[in-house]
Image 1 (cartoon, helix red, strand yellow):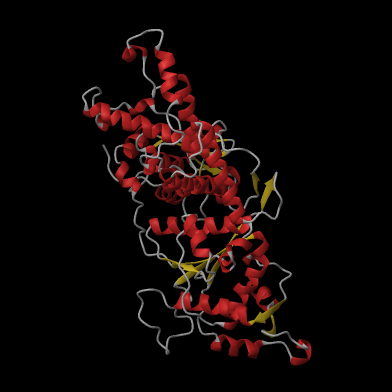
Image 2 (image 1 turned 135 degrees about the vertical axis):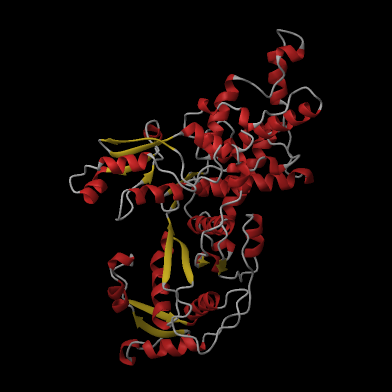
Length: 520
């Protein structure tokens, strides 16, 4: 059997190379109805731009069909279709390669070359928890997810701003968000001097409030960078304040003075650090316009400002059944109360004051919130139905996923104990499995995995006691149902069994979570 880790990136790179010089045209298919017939597609319009009449030479098709190389998935067939050039993989061989070396996929592959350092900036964290809107909370959770994902892939990440509000660290700890606390304020003298030189003429400034230095024109910079850069064409002037200079000074220092680096040289070239760091501003849609001003003002006042600055704008959060002024702490308390209520209904008594369950309810509440906030693409609008109670019956809630994760945890824990007692054999070696039986795409998200398992469990109650084990033909089903309903809503024995809190952030955006797939 061939060895080595397969990769979508490696496969796409080889496919584009096989077509010859030009822009990339292949993409990985993700829609269920198309996955029945293809795994990759080179769209017809792109092929027409590459080959003129859109007819791919036969030699190219043969080269694609025989594609091989490090990390390249084995190809079954490649053929022209009305949609373009379709390619299907040898799925049994792919499944065998992946499932036969799961450990290689749990740890992300090391990047071929060190990428740029990433400075993640989440301006929402400059406020107090009580002022944090739900759209800002979404930006905070997305930034935390992005930081964890980048670090898991070996990237160097720094987080800004350092939290200064005395109540924010406690709230972030409650949300299981790891963010740096306050540090010394960065000096603003150099930026202030540069800003004073760029200010509009005195006659245009008039009488200015305390803390306001004046206005700086950004129109020329917007035109220079062009509309393709994505800046709002209405950007014109920026009001420069002491607070804004403090923001820029913190960003400037974070980009220049990376942990572990030697102190920057005074004789360094102006652009020495400009291309070593990429800045990602993670903002809510309400903060987008102001953050573009910060981006442009930084470029205008600092010759060493990073050349690459990206804006990850999170869409609005709409609330059904609650006032639009609901704050982030109020949202957490609401979900926490619903989790406690669901447990009380399940167990027939209130466990919220039981110290043994306090941590459990906190973890479940945070997992529910993160599931809601991260299960929709960041740029899209998010609709929260806060009036809905926490239930394991719906198929789109975090509770439904956690419930099925708990089922799986119980299943494999029971199997392990029974195997140790000699009641069940050990799992067969991977090499003995018939992978030709696997033809369909694997699940991409925890919701789909949970739905598949729930559907299977509804047909075959593998967690219950069978009639043969019970010894009484007619009572097995009743005993099985009793065993199932008597289990806790979610076991508090080992929270890490659910894997949800650890796996959800990755699986929400990045496809299958290997840790959850391993037992299944």
